[in-house]
Length: 490
Image (cartoon, rainbow, N blue to C red; front, side, top):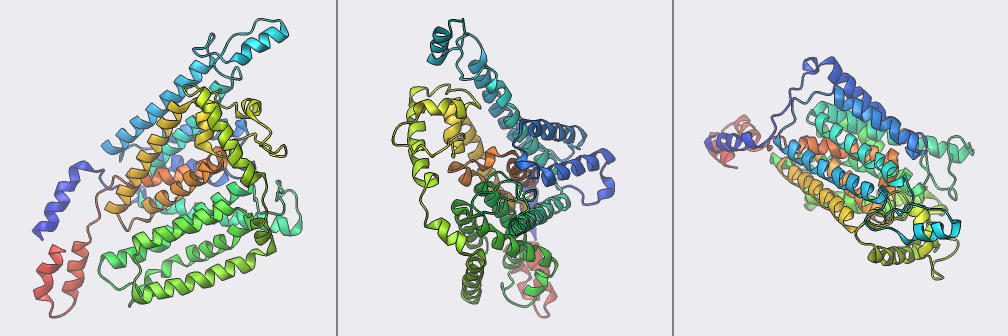
């Protein structure tokens, strides 16, 4: 027992103390803050994915109000250091926007001199393509920062984390079913964006819908894996006695996970479905380490489930895979053109928020004329194009830092489903946005960062210790007095 108590005391000063579970100790303002946060996460996908700048302002105001009302009792040193890094990222964003907007700019674009000559009027030489676009663009990273901070502040409480994940999972089921019903009944109001019969729900793009549904599925998977991870860590066989009881309280989440997996192929998003399945398989292999009967049962179940998913998706999915268009060939050509443009202006780019206006000048005959690139289809490349390589590298570095914190948290707290869910959802969002623009859609950005923020909030809680639980289990068996010391050592 000395080994156990010493390890616990050594870890205590470096981590955030676990919050009390009782909701009666929370202040009224803190509960109001959490309620507003849930409202924002639930409804953000509904108004066309909240892509309009009006909704960016609305949700930023809500997130700011959440931070004003929330309690900061459980914010620890690790959280503060993380928030300091976030402030640095925002400062770099602000500096780039300022340099692109002041006149004369430090690296003026030639387009201003040409326009002044053609129009025969004096125009201020700016380092961005559009006068006010860089400063207006700051609303989006500011919103992202506010949502992430709110998630970190509220995320230490396991009850609240459970409520948030369940709401994300069930909301995705509701919106997915509404979109599917609207598609079947041809109700335009329920499916405002028709993309070749694909399931889009309330988002403007089928790929963002796939990432949203896939994120909800990964969150559900993390919650379903938690009891099995706990059994393995405590020394119980995965499929032994009590395995059914371990999942008895997760029936609703299990049904939701299956439903989301059935809806996912209906979006016709190749990257969305493939990345979701690969991340889910990697998570199961990493956390559960299936062996023997458990591995065989999982393999059979996976094959059966995949067959059901493919059978239910209809011919539209298979036709989609056989079709080559601008989404495949043209996208890679556009990436090459963007990199050539970045090489010409690596420091400041062409203006934050100005991709649609700046990119057409770089198109050539190799890019199909049918390809409409009003958005970069790769968030990091588009960010480097608009804001320059230094800004893109700072953002990528901060994202890698968050990933490292979540991986460390998942290792230290292996049975905490909320940290694992944050890691899986964050990976899906980042990887999919590397070949598309899911994180540029405000409705999905809010959902993704809310889950990630809660995971970051819990990543600094004390390390889990399963040795005591194993000791109690050994004591319950008659005639096991001699094994008591062994249980403590493990």
